[in-house]
Image (cartoon, rainbow, N blue to C red):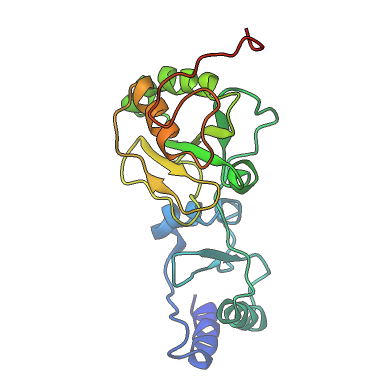
Length: 223
């Protein structure tokens, strides 16, 4: 309505050339509403505006406070000052996560992956190639269970990805060394391909394989 439009314009004038403002019909942007986790507000069918913002690097922010000129102004000020908390779309954190392939969601990604070499599959539930890869990935997880490497997967349709990760198609696979940025995996998808790759790039040499991917012989103590 013009009532709310005039109030948004009042704030927009104060932040001219600093923050770009736009006003639209919420029914025309339902997909964006879902991306910012604002479905609950939308479903209430209230007349009050919903406010969301995007940062310079695509970060997502939403205003949870009741709409008012004062709250909108404070929201814009905090956006410029870097004081807002980035909203991440996330599935619930799994209650149990002790399988050979760890389940990642946006809200546990950092806790599971940080400080460890990790091979991460970004998948979609409907993706045929992802389903075909699943048995191989499970076997890889079993083979790496005694190594300091995390084998993990994340539903790229239901979770926002952290910086450095993106997916133009499914599956997309990344290797994330424990002390470095992620790199996209662009090799074969047979079990041997994954093992050879991890043996070659792992931060610390694997206990079960040489750098060339050859299986180490067990010592007499291990037999």
